[in-house]
Length: 153
Length: 120
Image 1: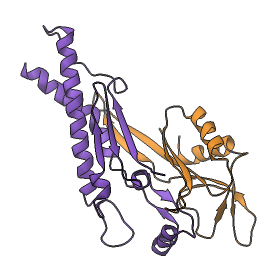
Image 2 (image 1 turned 180 degrees about the vertical axis):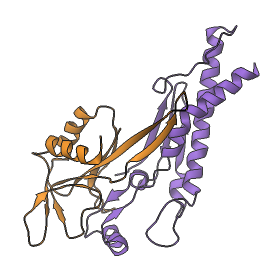
Image 3 (image 1 turned 90 degrees about the vertical axis):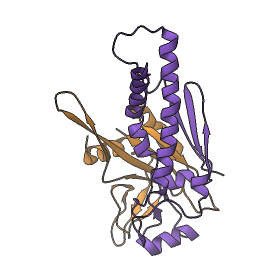
Image 4 (image 1 turned 60 degrees about the horizontal axis):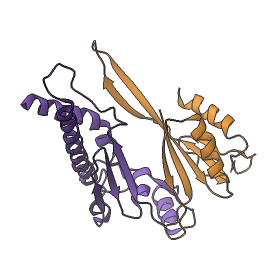
């Protein structure tokens, strides 16, 4: 059983931003710019997500806190991008990826349950959502990339 | 919507599916709670937990206005029984735009089956 994490960012779902002014370009050229911007925005998302994992910003019940989300590097190194034309998948294939991102409740009599009860009194691990901030910023980043490309023409 | 209203709505939606919190020296209550339930509460069946602090996102609008969006995190945890899937269907019908995150039970990792709804 694995809890690999797959995030799919779809160009259609995010509204396919198009610059709001008259320009003497054919539709194919505009589409090409949007697709290029979509790809670059996803690459930026991946880089920002990796930064979130390695940032010492996450509260933790014992020292050091705040801390990063790196123990042995397995989660960080499990990232696999799958670029597509209008959909881009971001996978974290570590078996506990979703547990770390969303947090989890363990059985009280399990090993991790007992560890967490020792630390906090509850068999619960808090979530550390390294994708939240990069996702929030995705649309604005893509708009900026697209605006810069149009500005370069 | 606030946490109290959300809790009331979830209690109504899940009324036949929720398990209970056993409390020492007093009667059991439905297993739904906003924030951290007291450590002496013991859950059985399906538990519904609403995180006390929602995720908050401030978006700038025109005319120096801004919009504060709150996203509530609701976790359904299956301590025993098989009501989790039914509960997920009930909530998915009501909160059609929610993001759903699924964690399956694992003996090896000691984790219970649970589903997280992120509800705006």
